Length: 540
Ligand code: OOB
Image (cartoon, rainbow, N blue to C red; front, side, top):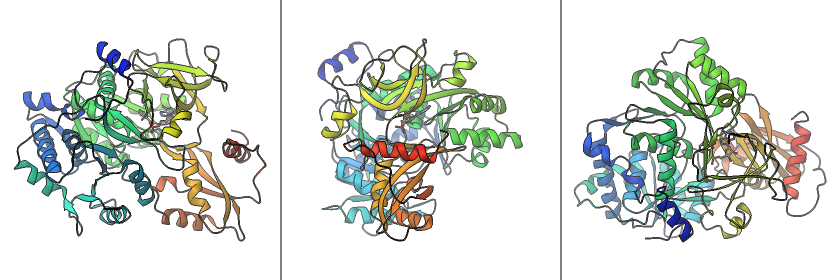
């Protein structure tokens, strides 16, 4: 099935060195299902299931998907919140040889439609209603816009013409169980990139490369069958999925607790009740937890490690978090495209507080180069390039974009500015990519600008980052009006109305009569954004 995502000689090398083992992602929990079927694997708001039950559900649903006509290699959009059915559905799709495309619950019609154009899915799986939003209508609207439509599978009460996930599973349970053989070096699933372009790029990952990153993460983070991982970040993100994430916790025989959000009111009692040992957080949540623990006395005694990643965590906040929560901090710097760096348990306190960790694998190649692509002097900041046994060699069906996103010799241009310390640890200093990192959620400037430009009274628009004490960065839409300037409220209503994830709606609107003149040429938009950001943040 499929074809390898990596050049043949590298596949051979990665196998010979033992990085790639030919195992499948949908089998991470299989060993414990046989040996300790009653051990609790997953807990969410409504249920707790053991390893044996998890395996039964995956098998049944995989057969059910096949009976619904979902064939090996076909793509299926998966938009479930943090609950047991998300993990079961993802694994069941892979067991059936199908390819999950991981969406966030926050995505709306404009993101879904753009992703559907690229992924050409045959089906969509989502909740009925979640956080007050009706996904059945969203799914219906998406399907209507696709020639031939989509099969719509709903976890909950389905709408008209839609089918219940539970019915698919029940149907599958009555059928013969089978595992569809897969090429473990070929496409296993598609993940969304943070994005720097008008349409989001899809990241193709294989069983082999992804499992290697999970296995190596489990080793570094010391996950074992005593691990209790709390997931408050959306499980579709790479960080809570694989660094070591729920896949790592299951591979180690631990327990995964799925929560709907990361508010301390919800998370602190859960930590005590479930005896949570580890939690991945983005910096704003880490700050919120530190603040909340100062004014209350939660019992967090089971919590050993708080992982913080997705955006820069400042050294002062890093020290405070450890003091106030009484935990070990682990900084995690990674990307859905591949490379993940961790601070280690035996790193000294300064390294943990001040660096973003070092690459997880000896096979990770890291280069820091200047604008001309030449290596900088050791310790100097520069553009971070990387390649290795779990970093992609190209985005999905994006030949043109890949020519610039990767170097000729296969390094991924991360768009991050970093420096590397003598011990290999990286310090992230900034970014060259046209992206806003809003507390770990990435926003492509171009994507939002395209929405702004569709407003009848917007002549020109640029989206730039503004520093924010809590989120790190927020977005500001700088607008040159056509006639009467639109108000912020009008812009917010307009962008929301186009169906985009809430985090992409501009936080601020700034009206200017004209844009500064920048050099012409391909990079002029990037230069314009930089010039506007400098005007807005004179001290940054
Ligand atoms: C993670 O993945 P993505 O794909 O959402 O975003 C990747 C980008 C990086 O290129 C960098 O710009 C930024 O997010 N980033 C950080 C960071 N971790 C990620 N910037 C500064 N400090 C950090 N610790 O965000 C992701 C994937 C796997 C593990 C952890 C994070």
